[in-house]
Length: 489
Image (cartoon, rainbow, N blue to C red; front, side, top):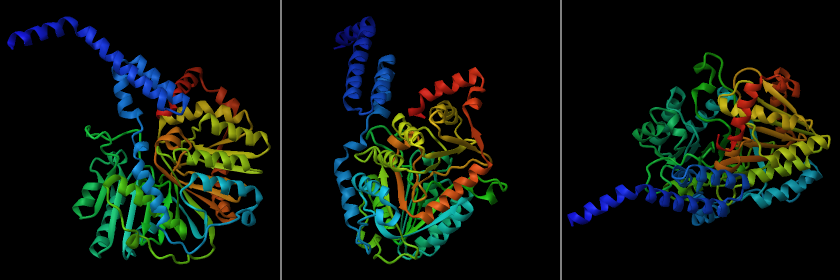
């Protein structure tokens, strides 16, 4: 036996380069074939095959960790999502003809939404716009304090800072009143705080979980590429909050020396709240395998305060609804007749959406795009700058907002249709993250959002081709090289 071990060691010593080469070829070929056969986006396929070939051993390992979409293979859970949406009893029937309410061009957009969303477009919703943390967080805390039966809270980032502790205290008081509470935080977002918020929640006896902590089954690490970016709060099944705002003290004036970061959130009542809850229930079951009983968590449908507006949730993510938001934006840009207003902190649309925006501008539609003057992600800002010339040449107008960083994700079409929620216009939101957005057919809501965007434009700096060309060659080269990596930012 000892002689065999000595002989084996001798063979490994003499032939390890050959064995390493054979292993790298087998792993690399297997990974490259898998990428070529399963990736629907040719850019993603080429990128991954290139990484695998250029890094014979490291490349396949990176592809195993970040390149394989295991979520889409969870067919049983994805089918159960449809059940969640069907278990809701609504007071208001689906909208039969949106054209009669906001104009004929929007009929095709309603049909598109019917085909890419699990949810039906329903009237009877009340939408309240909340500007900044100073309006949003007190409204959310008030709803938690008034909760009687259930609270569902989901956030990408839930910091354990002073604001986070306020929310934990409010949730703890609700828990002591007998309210059933579930809190879902993304595993990557939880790492923004050195002391994860889940420790504080568990200490108070509040049921909580981290989304996508262990997708590989044997590696105890977050799956960094697939994140839950949804921001939801549903109280008693009757009041919902959603939009772009995480739970962070930097968005409140009292914690930011009077200079908070900006964002926009929305308070909803009506059928859309049940759709928010259906999304949460699916994500909670996906994470914990606990099915929240619709008989208890779904409130009986009650009329929302007027004015009533048609709305529906659009859930998207790296599952069979991967391209839902992408399709909705394409459709919205195609039916625009007068004006497209966009505000996004991270504006990195792919060539399809760029083409749709540029075509709208060439048709005579006024396209205004507002991005931050000061961005919290430097690399994303460099990549954005490298791509702005593509929309400027087509006649779109681009504005860099002054003042504090604005994290708002807002869009309106022709003053009648609004798209709000968690999605950014970047590759991560459009292909990798789990997102939740809401389309709203209301001229009043659109006017409020337009006013917010127009206020930014009034104080913003216009970006021009001349200003872009005046940037030094070294910085333009840097921006372009980082832009090449934008799918991974």
